[in-house]
Image 1 (cartoon, rainbow, N blue to C red):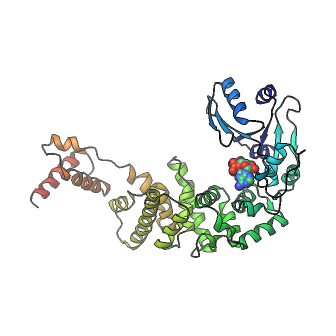
Image 2 (image 1 turned 60 degrees about the vertical axis):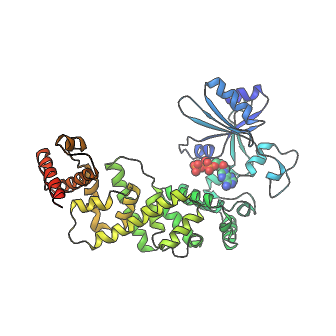
Length: 408
Ligand code: ATP
């Protein structure tokens, strides 16, 4: 349908990039990117109207996102063909804009398009050897200045290499190493750099990627204190085992990059860690929140390791202010000896609730005050530790606790 509409307005439309790449490799991909020779906004609006879909437009960049009624999204972009968008060589007049658009992309494997217009519908557009590089499992840049133009491609190369189990082509690898030597990573803006490391940490084979980053000498651009050794590899694997357990048992989605990120930067001291978050341009609230969760986790780990007599209420009080992502990090640094403690926390301790609440205390004749929280917290601790068992006990002990408070 997009092709038919494109014909009506005299434009060419193509599906490009990741979707086509993954299609050739028979991998599912639901990110559809359309590139239009002509104004993509016009086409997107027509398409949205036809489909009764929502459209949001970025006039400056001539891009649009169409959200279909079933929430499926399609991105529309105008082929970028201006000469100043074209770093390495001046485009020839006869080059079609799709060719120039594809030339601006990161790697050959992403430079493939499928034409949607009626004439040539389904034709593969492959100017730069995308199909053969996909077949050969090779990551290759399109020109020698690719990493200089955009050093974040260093991370993208590694990410695609581990995701598809592709090699980085020898010439591309030389360029990549050269870019690293030139310290181009320092020029990547913080938010971009953060996204790149986050995406890598979300990959299934992220440990391979971290290993490549270590071998290429990339990790030190984050901090000189990173310790990514054989030993730490085992801790990462243990973390992944815990995450697996968690996702099966607890069935809640977590931000998987967070515990991995914390482990990667575990050997950074407080000041170094905060500096890193600043390099990543975390906003001040998020930075505070994130750092406090990390250092609470680290302290909790130290305390749990020292404590000889760990009660349920102690576990509860130690972990209750931590988000699950950070509890998982903490569990990884605690190690296998404490595996059951964490499992108990999620399957048992966290499930225990009091049967009575503030209203019941009021019904007993007490006036609501600060003391309520104290009493309820205390009751929960007693219940966690098996001292009180049922509602009758809860009420009995509530009265006792109030009496204790009254008598100082
Ligand atoms: P993923 O499955 O990770 O989303 P993708 O190929 O769809 O993979 P995106 O990051 O969504 O990746 O990018 C979409 C397309 O935009 C890519 O296929 C690529 O050609 C192009 N692209 C993205 N980032 C860059 C970049 N830094 N330099 C050049 N081209 C890029």
